[in-house]
Image (tube, rainbow, N blue to C red; front, top):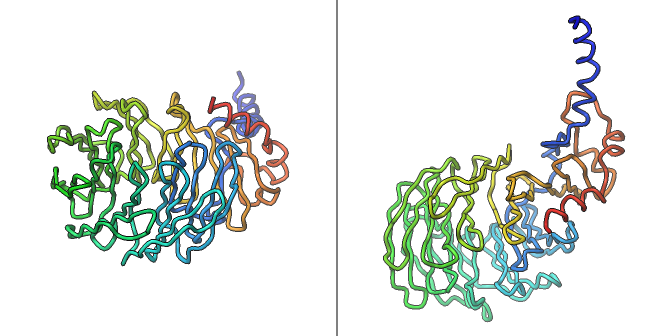
Length: 383
C-alpha cells in the first residue's frame, strides 16, 4: 500500500479509534477539584462505606444505591480514622485533634464523646463483641475505651514511638500492634500478658490476624511481610513484596488469600499457604490506603487519600468503577469503560478526555453520560 495512503488512514482514523476506546477509561478527573478522602470503613453487611474527609465531614455511601446517602458533621478537624462496630449500629470517628466520637450511622446523631486522646489516633478498631474500642495513638500508647461509658479501661504506654496499627483477633483473645519503633507485639487482651515481641527492621505500618486467629501478619514501610504463629509467639515466615510502604492487609473470608496495598500504587494478592502472588492489580497513580473484600470476596473496594474510591473484580483484577466527590458537593461515578453517572452537568467541567482528539464538555456528556449503563455494570458485578 502507498505510504501516503497509510498516512491518510492513520491520520483521520486514530482520533476516532481513541474516542471509542473503552478499556482503562480515558475519562479522567481533575484532582484540584476533588474533596480529599482521608479515612474509610466498611459496614459489616458490606453494603455501606463510611468516608472521612480532610474537610472534617463523614459521608455514608451506599454500595446498593451507588451514592452518598448521609452526611455527618461535628468534627472541627480532618477525619483520621473510622470504624464500624461489629453489629453495624455504631460508627466511631477520630479527628486530627484526637477528638473521638461515636455516631449512629443511620441517623447521623452523636451517641457520645469518648475521653480525648492527647494526640490523634492512627488506628481504630472495635473488639469482636463490640464492648470495647481500641486506638493506636500518636502519643506512643494504645488506649482501650469501654463503648457504653466512653471511659478508659486500659492504657498501654510501653512504646518509644507512635503506634501505627492495632488489631483484635477474631476470637477477641488477643490484641496486636505495629509501631514506629519497629516492634510487632501481641498481648492477651484480658490479662495483658505479652505473648509476642518481635523487633522488625523498619517501621511496622499494619498488623492483622487471619480469620482463624492462629496467625498474625505484619507489613512494614520497606514492603516486607512477616507471618507469626500466635500461640507459639514466633515468626514463621518472612518475604519481600513488591508493594512498598504497606498501608493495608486484608484476608479473604476463608483465610486462603490476603491482599496488600500501599504507596506504590499496586495491589498484590497472595496465596496464604504457599505465599505466592496470585493476582496483580495496577492502581496507576493512586496509592492504596484502605482495602476491603466484599460480596463473598468477588469484589474489592479500595480508597486512596487523593480522593478516589475504586471497585474491583477479584476474578480478573480489573477496575469496575471509581467514585469521587468534588469540593462544591457534586459527585461522579465512572466505569472502566468511561461511562459515568454525575450529580449534574457541571461535573463535565471537572472531568476531561485524555485521548488524542479534542472533545468538548458537551460531546463528553452526550457520549458517556449513561446512569443506567453505570448501574448495570457496577451492580451486575456484585451478583
